[in-house]
Picture 1: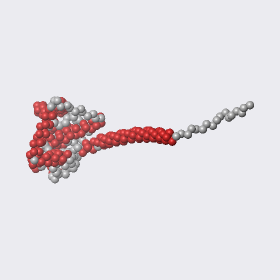
Picture 2: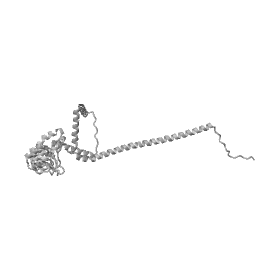
Picture 3: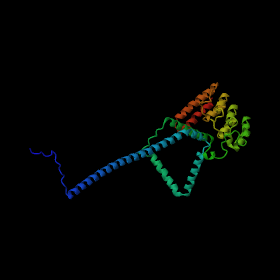
Picture 4: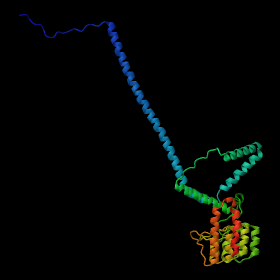
Length: 334
C-alpha cells in the first residue's frame, strides 16, 4: 500500500515585490489620513454647534437681564409714584427748573439771532406736522389699571395746583420767592396782629396790612385756618370780599379737613355762602366735611351750585367762563 501524505499542506505566502509593498503602505496611510480628517471634521462641527448654542444662550440671557432691569425700573417708578404725588406740591422744585430753563433759552436767543431763526423754523415745522392730516397718529400705550389710576391721581394733583395758582393770582416766578406761602402758624411777621384784626372785624387794620403785603390772606393760625375760615364762621362779609380781591383760595382746608363753606353753612351765614359759591367754591361734600343745613334757602343754593358744577364739567373749556358768568347771578336772587 502506498503511504498517504498529510491532509493539510502548509502553503507558503508568495513574496511581494517592493513596489507592491510601497503601494500598500501608501494606501494604508491614505486611509488613515481620511479617517483622521473625518474625525476632525466631525469634532469641528460639534464644536461649532456648541459655540452657536452658547452664543445664542448668552444673547438670550442678556435680553432677559435687560427685560428684568426694565421691569425693576417700572416697578420702582410705580412704587415711588405715591412719593412723587406727595412731592408734587406748590413748593416743589419744578417751577424753579422751569423758570431757569426758560430764562436761559430766552437769553441764548437774544444773544444768537441764528438760534432764534432756527427756533422759529422748528416751531413752524411742528405746527405743520401737527396739523397735517396725512401724518399717522401713534397708537396709545396700554397701561395697567393701577398705573392708570396713579396717573389719574397725578393729573388731578396738577390740575388742582394750577387751579390754586389761578385763584391766588400767582405765577411760578412769584411763587418761588422767599416767604410767599408759609406753612407754619403765624410764621410771617405781623400775622398774629392780622388775625386779631380779622377776628375783631377791624376793616381799617385788615385793609392796611393787606395793602402792605397781600400774602397775609394765605397765612394760617394755630388750627391751620385762614382768615376766610374766620370770616365764614363769624359772618364778616366785607373782610371776606377784601380777601377774595387779594387772591385767597375758597377751598382751603383746616386741621379738621373743613372748608370755609362748611362753617358758613353750619352758622347760617347766607351772604357768605352766596359769596363763596359765586367764587366757584366746590359745592360737593367729601370725607370729613359734609355740607348740611336746616335752612331751605341754603339747601336750594347748594343744589343749584351742584347743578352748575355738573353743567360746567360738560361744557367745552373755551366757553366755560362765559357760561359761569351767565349763571352765577342766580345766587344773588335769593
